[in-house]
Image 1 (tube, rainbow, N blue to C red):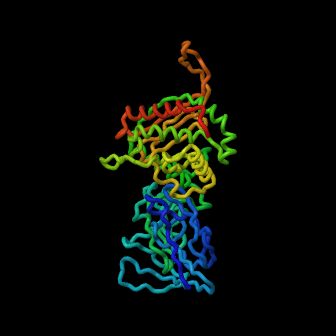
Image 2 (cartoon, rainbow, N blue to C red):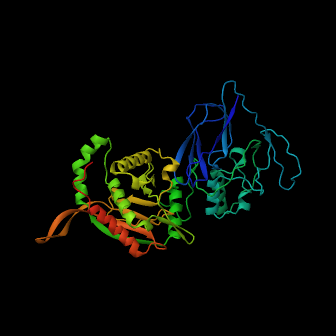
Image 3 (cartoon, helix red, strand yellow):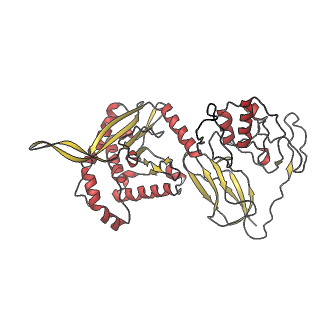
Length: 446
């Protein structure tokens, strides 16, 4: 009976590894083709991985919270009936001080040195490494912490307990490591934040003990967002320009056609696809906005891929990408915007949905803000924020003279990388976007 290797799938051009969040199956379980096998997380999005075969799971080669390279075998499935599961023996690994000593089989009740990689150090989950780094725990010190987790691994609970004892001045003695499995894989370690282990309380930071506060540990997605934002500010010197646009024509046109548009296309039209269309048209006149910087080389992108900030169920924001936005009409943009937003709300985005963006639009007006100073989504060089549309009295020039009228006004702000986008280019592009919005045809057909 054939045995099928299930590998960590390729989830985007730039994604080389993923963190295993949760296994939906265990060894011995039956699984169908395309049934969800596990959940994974990349630095962009969480995703479910379906099985590429039908049968019985005979091996699971990685644990939850492990970081696995794309293409690595993560599990094996034996198709057909009468599946015989492999016998897993537990063994002791010889200590590093005596590499020539042969490994001897031991029972689960015996103690053994912890598994080592080629450098003689244990394997740790990224979460444990993250805590160790934040607490200033060196690798040599980390290796002396006894683990209570599966296969002797140091868990979040272990290291938090160690940190608490360390701060109190009571240093715990390093206990022996646990038994390991002969089939335990060597897992590459990456400094990537992963999901929290459940039922473990967050330690109180120094200075807050006994105070009336609530301590909430950031979830994995929030940690990644924080890292991405800090990295962007450290990479690009940010400059932000502001302008405003009279979008009265757009508001009136949308109010007039939204019912017939939905009836004709079975899609609700929002302002976002109209904003994206204006950005695309302006970008054709100022292509340097659609670029990135690599070393001393400016890479001008010929494809216009617009990222749009969308909300996840957790409240965090993610940026799915509308590929080749310049090739789509207003209906095509509307359909993609709605699909991406719905998939984000329902945790259905695929890793590739967030890849390849060349420019980002964020609608801070959705949350009531008049304007914002957004942080550039690296490696892009600019990001546009559109604010809430508000009625305001505006002075209009007419053949009969200046008049004051109530108009639907919106602020726009563009943050850009001042290494390659100077004020002239940034302001000119932003002004052109506003002009595109104000030139909107009120008689446009749907």
